[in-house]
Amino acid sequence: MDHIVYEPYSKNTSLIIQKYEDNILDGFIPTKTDIDSIQITQERHKQIPFSFEVTQDMVDTLACAESLDQYYTDIEPVYTNTKIIGTRVYKGKCVICMSSRYTKIKLKCSHIFHRKCIQQWSNWKQTCPTCQDPL
Ligand SMILES: [Zn+2]
Ligand SMILES: [Zn+2]
Image 1: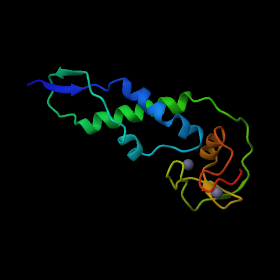
Image 2 (image 1 turned 180 degrees about the vertical axis):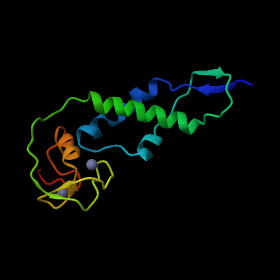
Image 3 (image 1 turned 90 degrees about the horizontal axis):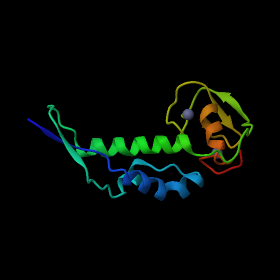
Image 4 (image 1 turned 90 degrees about the vertical axis):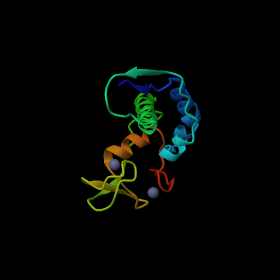
């Protein structure tokens, strides 16, 4: 039995990029809810002879995740070589990657991030992602 599998419609990618370009440049990372609010257009589909169901949700989520990944990879750094100053800590959660593993640094505003995460962030914006204090 053939199954109909929807392919992500490439217009979705440009919609997402368009809608969030300004937000990302302003230092806001879109959440899944934001992405879900975009009207997804499905125009192409194909029939495939295998026997598990690919739900619309899965297709949409993958399409959004891939396009955003690509966008974050391609984005031009605004600043380079900002020196991030902070004290080494182990406790706490990095809100950029939502992980509490590994050593983190505590900024002077007392917010905690992985050095790598905050360093990448500083390429876009030189303020704390949580409180907007200068880095
Ligand atoms: Zn992190
Ligand atoms: Zn802060």
